[in-house]
Length: 281
Image 1 (cartoon, rainbow, N blue to C red):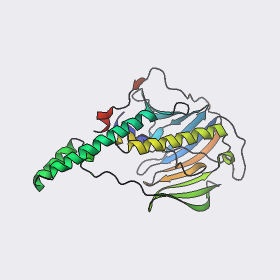
Image 2 (image 1 turned 90 degrees about the horizontal axis):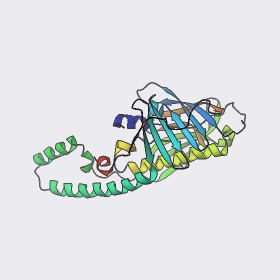
Image 3 (image 1 turned 45 degrees about the vertical axis):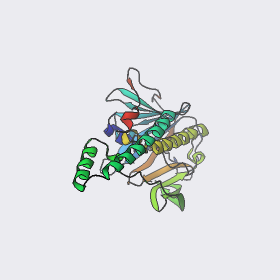
């Protein structure tokens, strides 16, 4: 999977919509959700999410018509399906967490050793060495480790109307920085069955964990992990906006999944997750 493909998948979002303002729909165990993804500097993309029997399929993930995302609640995997390459790549939470811990320790050790060596260099030699390291893709070794995010704070701003529907708006802060705006509503009000909402929650929680873990080591996977809302914001997002200005807005929700197939395509090559040396490049 290329870095470009990974970046495209990094803005995936999922949510749901009330079908008629002020009306409560009947819950059902199979859901199709249509939504619009707006990314900075790119055309709007219509997407769809299909949820059934513990599995969710996101079409046109990140706005790329060649990329789908398949989430399995039972084994906690997210599989990136690349129709152009005819390949699949499964992101396994346990393996990523283990690799992230190993790689993070190696990066910290290498950073300390490199900075110690650079202390004895002249300004000119240090500048040349920095350029060489960055040219080899090791820029993160000479950068200080990212500061941990500030304390998460949720600020409720009241009931808002989106597409004629009421939702509760929450501003999400990390320290003093606002990182997201989410306008959400309870799943039962949206007509989503409890089992389907459980898939959404599980997918959201896993995606957040994967993003946190992979952010420690490399954007090769970290930016490819989708975002499905904030784990601490109750309900399902009708509209979600991240700190970069990308937004997701639900346009429809209906019972059933039509002809959608919530399984991996047959005949596609199975790619393996990057190993430790690849992750820390």
